[in-house]
Image 1 (spheres, rainbow, N blue to C red):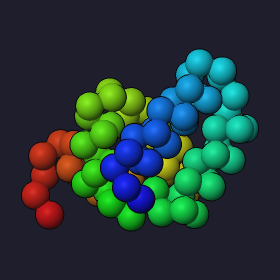
Image 2: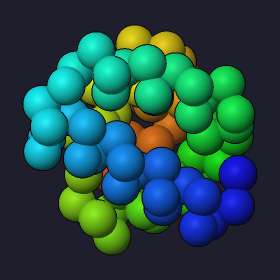
Image 3: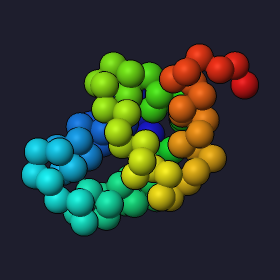
Image 4: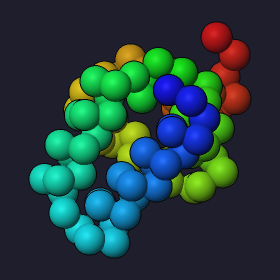
Length: 81
C-alpha cells in the first residue's frame, strides 16, 4: 500500500476503535485492509504508528499476523533485524 493509503487506513481504524467504539466494525475493517496489503511494509506502518501515536492498533494486528506485529514492535523499540 502507498504511504497515504496506509496513513488513511490507520486513521480510519483509530476512528472506528476509539471514537465510535465499534470493535466489530474495526476488526472487519482491519481484516479488509490486511487482505489489501496493509502489513506488506512493516517499517512504514511502524513509522506511521510513531507519528500518529496509535500503537494500540498492534493488539488488533496480533489477531491476524503475530509475526508482522512483532516486527513492528521491534522497529518501534529500535531493534535491528
